[in-house]
Length: 152
Length: 469
Image (cartoon, rainbow over all chains, first blue to last red; front, side, top):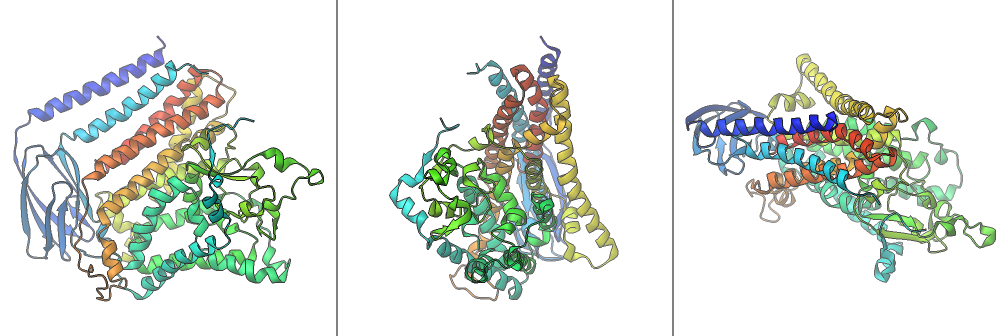
């Protein structure tokens, strides 16, 4: 077998092993209560990425810094509108869905309001890991198909 | 001669033919499109400054851009150019007023040969792209952009013949043109042999280019008998009207076949265009949908009143230019070099491979643009009833929807983004493989050469998906 193909196969095996190990490790973690204090300001959130594990109880206290803001998490459909400066709001939920979910400001707060975002990542992010594997698989399959296909 | 791919002439349908040949169709469609864009300019200047409540921003950057990227360009190519309102005043002056003065030098200036490529158009697109943060959020800036485009187009139409503006300057045209090559529709001659027949032997007088009493010569400076690509065909329908031999077809064809056709002429500036346009949905996604507030504020020129802010903004400009003109083209150049090494050939230059393979990124770019716009419309659709009910943000409630809350539809986004990205990767590989197959004689060489490009395609797709799933 050509050494290039051997290398390609080794890379694919490597990706599969690393992904498998990370998945097993993620599953072995216990559930925790995760508490975040998120500052909402024009036009972003601090911290900009919240990382939790699936099953965690997530408590988020949102403080509006400079204007009236809102807090909305995609897919979880958790929404808190009209958070005023000086009056923090707290939301809580169980992070039962895996993946990356964008957080948006849900109260118009200025010009860049529609793009005021942050990320909530609930690990293990199988959607993303699956996509990496899927794209790799798609490319390998395409090359294999092209290799085996008889040219007219 | 057997055509390179399956096609069906839509003009065989009498109703479609009658509509296409009608002289009233284009002015009617253009006026319909012109009215909202004038309203965009008016609301942008005198309406509320909040983009989310102003017709100007909502119409242009939610409705129009989504319509272009999700429907018009992928399915109907340059159909927007057919009804484009930006050029309407200029074209009206050129056709109705200037035609009375004959061949005046003022209105027939020669476009410089050095600019007969898309580089100037690329730089104008990048110029607009750099200020996207203010452009897509500030009604006043959107209005100024629309007015600038209409004024620029009108001046160009006054000074230069035909649609020089559309071919070499129009920033939306950069996007529309290159991705129209993927669309399942084309204007082509039915039988090139008829075009090549000398007029002394019953052939035509090239009315498709020169014009006749039935229509104008090709405004896009295309010569239909030599046309093998949609990129510079504005679907203006003039050649249907002027051809005395009824030799022009409006073909339906499979998606993307043009990019796999051996007739396609690969050009260096077009290759750069494809790579730069692939970079922009990544940049837009990272800046607008990414979690980093600093990059949004650095990109918002209007926020700054001090030297620190201006320095940050300059850094932001350099960063965007680096990614668009440096990082992605650089990675593609690296992939081209590795591809040559893996294939083991010495007959092909890195530049040739760089140019040829760049066209394979067109389907991926189109899918990423579609994905970006899909996410945009799903998140922001509920602003549309609000701005229609109260276009100036003046407290009107024309439709009773002014106080509609923000209602995002988030569920389909991850699924749609995955489908768009995977489709883009697969279609790009298909085009890329066929492109390499026509360069390399041996299948082994072709597949080895494909590996670096496929790896780069995967990296781009994974980086894009990181923002959505």
